[in-house]
Image (cartoon, rainbow, N blue to C red; front, top):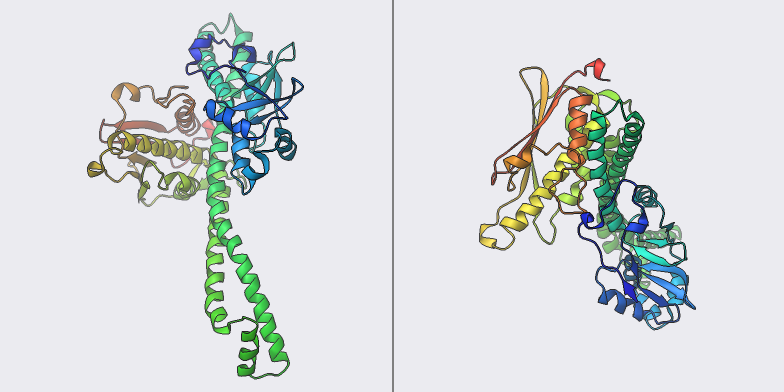
Length: 462
């Protein structure tokens, strides 16, 4: 069983704009369907980075099972007992996984677009790549994104050169612009997937709370119906109590517990309603593109959506948000785009605080400090509004501050970010609203991003 290991640096592959899947490393670990299910677990344990295993029958590929799908099924009750000792074919027929198969001559950028357009359930699943001789390999989705990110950087470099020679290479420049637009769309889709995952987690908690109480509520209602039926027979209260008690019904307990149960279910339903309302207001799908809006409402909706990221994690405590809102008028702006700016900057602050906590506080409990985000707003003397979003992390070195808003510049590890978030935010604030977006930071004292936009939008920018 041959296995190609994951790449750490896309430069090793010498990728080009027209590079295809053929140039990416794939895993070729195979196993016959008649092997027992626990053989899959052993293979995954032997190769911690193995994204998936090719399944064969009589040496012919019939499909693939991913690491995520396999261990997800094994974690279910009775999953290990049902499939560990049986042939893998039982598990494969039970799961019936949706598999993406692409020929090796597909462009990497095109393959990335196809992969990102899959359903949210399958978007991170590996891809089967086949060559002309019908041999198969498993391509890790994260390796595809890594290669795509590298090509994005190459695209930007090429785009900048082509701008200088626009008259001589107009056709090539137009093609690259189309490619760049597609990259921005990919960035938005990735960010959307991360946001949806957080929202799903936030909604899941109150949903489980409501669902867990439904059985008890149903039992109480059935008991109350029985009690009412006794009263319909014109029995006295003491007779009813005595009769239903023989059936295991405690009237006093129901009277005490049912209101509490309904109140707790109402709390869960209210939380779900708040999340859905915040998501609708965040996207502004039901409003005109340019509108007078409450900036504070947009910030609050963003914080609601990012609530899951603010909560305590195994490697850091909860991030506190300190708000000092001034009295702002309604502001004329592209509401949905401004919410995207708030989302990018606050999400970056969360990432920065998480990383700084690991570096400065994670190992020494005596020096641990609270990690916080500060949001402040006010009206400036020149009739603009100013929003300040700051953190008390490690800060940003001066050399890096100068490049923060450059497209594709990122200080995050490979696979953690494309470097487009702050670039898009700068474009929205400066070009779409005629405002300013800049960063003030002192190493060791945190970072502050300052947004300034006019109260009324210059119609020439629309």
